[in-house]
Length: 430
Image (cartoon, rainbow, N blue to C red; front, side):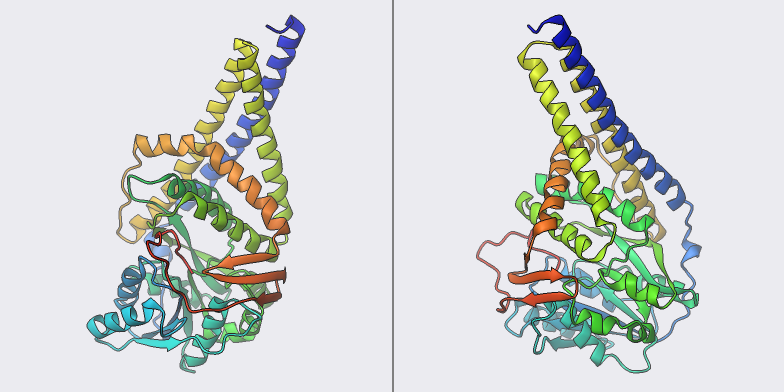
């Protein structure tokens, strides 16, 4: 046992650091509640303002994602009178090439889908950005709206109308949705960790109207006027430079409440570590406020590690009061983090209901699993933030890119995408 003065000091430190950790979790929960309350005010009529004009949907594919078929079937069955779909596939030897052609022959009765092979990719941008630029060259000149769609997004029949509708407002320069990860039960650690981490990221992304190119629309003419096509030729990621481009036009980005799209693809824990680092690297390259994320990550992780340290020290010296304080405040912090997750998920539930879809009720088992992964997700966030600060190369779909600045990208290799034997479905989302 420690001397009484040391015991008191341990109790004091455990209390102070525990209250700071719980306070930070409470702030996160309050932000999520404020966001939720504002979000739930949106009704379907808010975005049913589409004046159908000629539209084009652009997709890029490298590899055959698990949900590619559902995504294509969804985009080919839109309740929209005049649109086309331009799909750029990485290579004719890509397994998606035959798959997409077979699907087109069976389901594209209106001949909406044009399939293109990626041509002459430069070294100065990602394959995805080049695919988007190439697809723009194929879009008819009289097209009014242009939409971007990721291959892991399954659009509902009103998706294109809801995405382009807000563009009738001359002050709106772009319309975006967002993404929610809802792995099927029983979900593995990787899938649940990605879901929990993304819940917090989604709230701030929507609050600041940061665009997500997985479900995104602009006026065709504004894309050219903003200089986005030239910017994409020097960019690693498609949505990173959009905000600056729209701001240059003096326009605003509109978030469509019915377009929080649900992704059910599973992923491994190892994939989550790479994925979060990649997402934060894009943030570091394109967002001026990234240093705030670093400060937040370092502070929150330091406090959390200190709390666990006090708990283990207290257990080791059999100071049960200090141990109870440290453990109790860690539990309170975890519960508040789960409450923030639930608040964020309620927004995804509401978004789905706006388009006539129901997410299953959140089970106690899923909530308990999220609670158990709070500390894990926090550590991944902290480590990934620091890694993103120093990373010089990113490997993305077997392609390695050298990163200097947001406009100084170099692709270091290329080969057609070939899945490995027994490949996990976690290698998703081009």
